[in-house]
Length: 292
Length: 160
Ligand SMILES: Cc1cc2nc3c(=O)[nH]c(=O)nc-3n(C[C@H](O)[C@H](O)[C@H](O)COP(=O)(O)OP(=O)(O)OC[C@H]3O[C@@H](n4cnc5c(N)ncnc54)[C@H](O)[C@@H]3O)c2cc1C
Ligand code: FES
Ligand code: FES
Image (cartoon, rainbow over all chains, first blue to last red; front, side, top):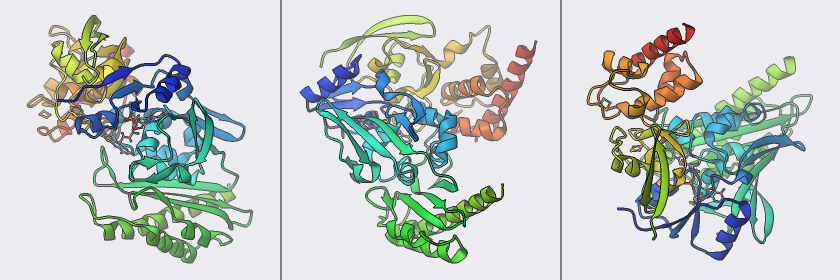
């Protein structure tokens, strides 16, 4: 038996923000794929659930002002179907394709994934390498936070109880930039990540790396960026040697645990291998792009 | 907690029911008699509870009934009748894709959503589309064949 709850279904954005400001125990519910599961497990804090799916402010994918901007209520299925995401955020497209299964993807939202902040939340690594920011809105105002600062730990973020995550945005990638994502799981469908990784490399005309991003999921209490590994690539061409060194540093950045899906040692080792393969594939893509 | 009145249109029949906020769409549907919608895990893992919610295939155990207030819901039983079954229903029966039958309604709903979007899917596309539907009996081969067979029939009907 589930315990008793109250429900709210605000018709407008203003009503939703007012409800959150007035009552500290209001829990937004979007796709419910974490909330309903948490409710059944008796883990939900708060007694009033507020459905936010009908608020138009949380929907839409658009490209404007040199940024891609998506509503916090965008479903993973919508991400997967969006040509703009495939074109401008390929690692996120790949993460959407590997996310849960089609039934869950039709409900699960990006806002829910980011606010739930599981260490294995699959939209984090691609959004981290895209330099994404999240927009948090309450009656008191609007603030933008880099995603890397938004997430704090297991199921913990900078979001205040009265805030809604309205949108996520990231700058369009410069020329001569490529990114890729890989999810390693125990099965191909409906499986939580053992480890996931995303990389992105920007290069100059000579093929030297001007900026690198390497992000990892399920290897620490929160999704992380491997800053030392990123730094090691800047100014370098991607070669077997520089790639291998960056991958090793990425493996060393992991703070994994043993759990039912994998041992900590395997996670650290496989993070290194996956990062090496992703960087190698990105290098190939950049070289092909240079020839075209 | 105050129960609220929720309006659900299921297989074209409209119901108004008073429900607590914790009642899932799965529970509400089964209590209304739509027992073709199965309860396998109640946490999104198995797909036995899949229905079309405003045209999209979802796990009804992960939707709270009041979130679906005013929505159109279709279950497997609503896709055809005993006399005039849906091509997917015929193909599942003919290809041995129904053994205990527990997963069947959900699998047909997921397959239906696939064929709406992609009328001629490959085997890989079928397997991916049904990756949220667990079957402990068939080993999936017959289900995949059934979806392919139904797709062929539906293409033919459409083509005249
Ligand atoms: C079977 C199954 C498989 C899954 N597989 C994966 C997987 O492969 N990868 C993965 O990363 N996750 C997976 N998940 C977890 C889950 O589906 C995702 O985290 C999903 O993105 C959550 O989105 P939601 O809209 O359902 O969130 P909800 O459950 O509605 O909400 C989650 C949390 O976010 C808050 N919230 C939601 N939207 C907002 C907003 N706009 N502003 C402020 N707060 C908000 C809620 O209050 C709640 O705390 C899986 C879950 C299930 C049940
Ligand atoms: S009962 Fe809903 S997914 Fe298993
Ligand atoms: S036929 Fe028995 S679970 Fe699929």
